Amino acid sequence: MTSDAHPTTELDDVVHQRTRLGILAVLREAGRADFAGLKELLKLTDGNLSRHLTVLADAGFVNIDKHFEGKRPRTIVALTKEGGRPSTPRLPHCETCSTPSRNVCPSQRQS
Image 1 (spheres, rainbow, N blue to C red):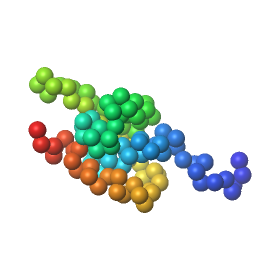
Image 2 (image 1 turned 90 degrees about the horizontal axis):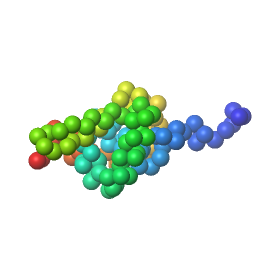
Image 3 (image 1 turned 180 degrees about the horizontal axis):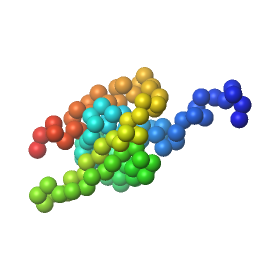
Image 4 (image 1 turned 60 degrees about the vertical axis):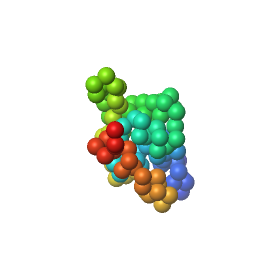
């Protein structure tokens, strides 16, 4: 490849897919989020969000913790060091992706 290759050749397909980029933007702001909050915020189905989280987890960008609170299942997603690395390019419109993310942080959700 020549040195004058277009910058998009440097993009990581795992990270720069629209939905996964949105997930990472929210997690970068909130640190962690519950599955239901991400689903609601990003307007995704259970299956769609689950698949994108699996791709991000397999790439080492997020940790997924599934546990029960009482009898209710709870899934918490958190960034890994790799997922929060500063080398991910900042895109101007991504700043707005994470604005409402405080609502998906488990410690701030109202039961």
